Image (cartoon, rainbow, N blue to C red; front, side):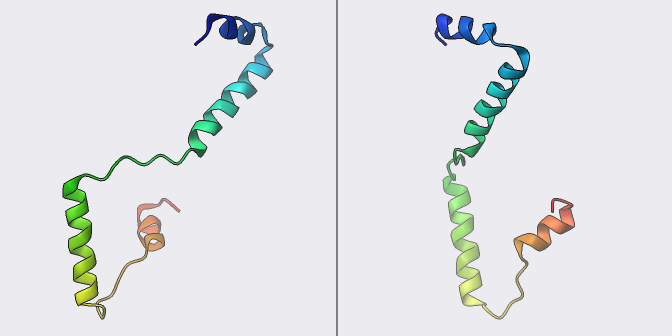
Length: 73
């Protein structure tokens, strides 16, 4: 970080610095970040999709159901 920028930020009052920090964190969180899928994961996803297409009559489980079971919703 540019030392002049840092010096200017430090001069701000605490509530303003806190708001700046929150805004910076929000800007990072808003960027879509997802780690790359490995070849092994890609193969597993393809196998699951192929199985689902071959057996469409089998029951499925929604993501909402899984989140609820894990207490994440």
